[in-house]
Image (tube, rainbow, N blue to C red):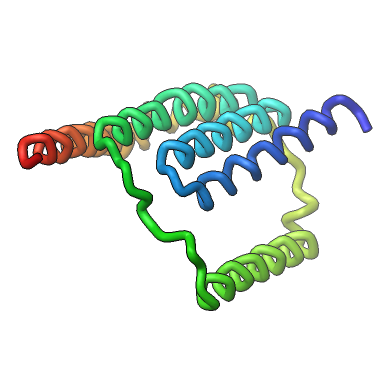
Amino acid sequence: MTALHTLWILFGALALVGAATVVFARNPLRAALGLLLTFFSYGVLFILLGSPFLGFVFIILYAGAIVTLFLFILMLLNLRQPWMDHDFSLKGYLTILTVGALYLATIYAFSRSSLASLTWTPRLFSPDAVVPGLFGSLLIPFEILSVLLLVALLASFALARGKEENA
């Protein structure tokens, strides 16, 4: 086993731990930190796959900006109570088992399909391949998304201000 394989296993396991933290954390702040760990691990995995542009976009954009925005909003809203009760009933355990079985069936089907034999091409996510689409045909959807994120940020400020005035 080479150092590359060891790094791949390490950051894959960190991504799984971060994703499990997002799902099972009682505190929303810890869930956001688990999301940060997951996005950072995905970025490193893309770098290890030979696509440094996509990896750094994941680290800078998702882990750096979006999770920081989530943390800022969570701290601004000052959430004290957990969003849901983690006392699972039989229905909760059956849901977890069903989702796990579907996940394993998907992995099995993918390993048997012809998609598993495809090779990774780092050129697919290189800046030369991404920039023409981003500044060409995808410019309008990209700008609409940025305005939507700005509106969501302003709405979170308005919600937080409304809570302070009512308290």
